[in-house]
Length: 397
Image (cartoon, rainbow, N blue to C red; front, side, top):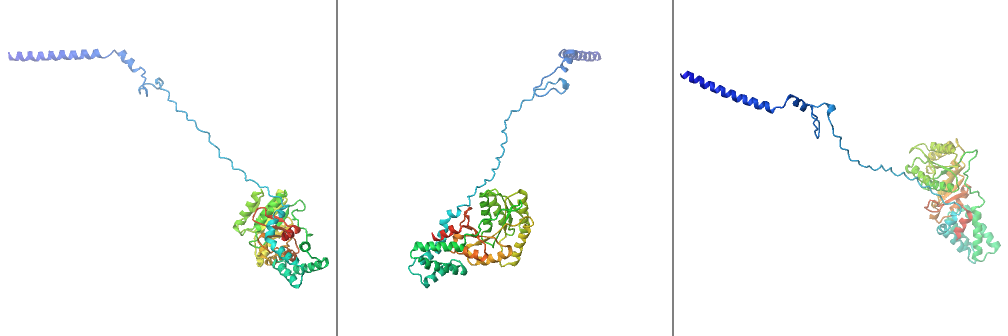
């Protein structure tokens, strides 16, 4: 009997469990959709705000268009301003420069004229008076020879004409000074070449006379006369000489031929003349290195520069630059340079800085060549063609 009861209990439990399982299975099948509905879900296009579902085909993906980037307006690049061409100056015409500078010259040279007129205006001219005149002329660096000639001429005219008043004495002195300076000398610049070649001007002198500055100023004189010019920087021993000369040239639109520092000056002169011929210019100005007249080696080299240049074209002018303040030492320089390169003209610089204007007379007598230009200041156009009468008038003004 107990066995039957146990069997019944177990059977009841099994029945209960079976009923519960049937209920669970029944509910699960009711929640699942039919098969057709499942297929519809897997093929449905799902629009994702950022990206398509990974299981969808690429062709089915609907991609949102990218947001347009904001347009940033960029300013057009501004081209740097073109450099302005260097301004080219128009130099002052050389005519009348000495007239403009006459007051400056008279201030520096007035003592010579005043000293002479003070003696000649006396009522009686005895031996002591004439000795005083001689001393005044010698102190002004006129030189012994020209002084003797001038005094002798003055004595004769004063006696023959019976000069008694200062104005008459002044006129006599003026005439004699103009005569000893010799206004008949040709003071024109030989700047014209022959056979279609340019004129070649060689500028020489010792150190410190203002040679390179004179070349620059002379270029301005020529440009003012509507001549085309090429500069040759044959002073290769002084580092700043070529730069200085090029600056002078640029101011008036004139090209400069230069070589390496310490190079052969003769080759620079040769190339400058070659350039002048090729460009068809009127004048080639060649600056040379300053050299002591006592150094024979340097003087021989100067002769070489001239000879090499003349393989291209004849040198039409050799200008010797002399510092007027050096006085009689300038005569020694003139003599030596004249022996080496055959000087044809003199440029006296710094004439406004000395009361010894008689150097004009002395240097002309020493070389037998005229003073062609005088420098009377620091300005760019303070180089003036020399005029004997204007010079004497400045002495006596």
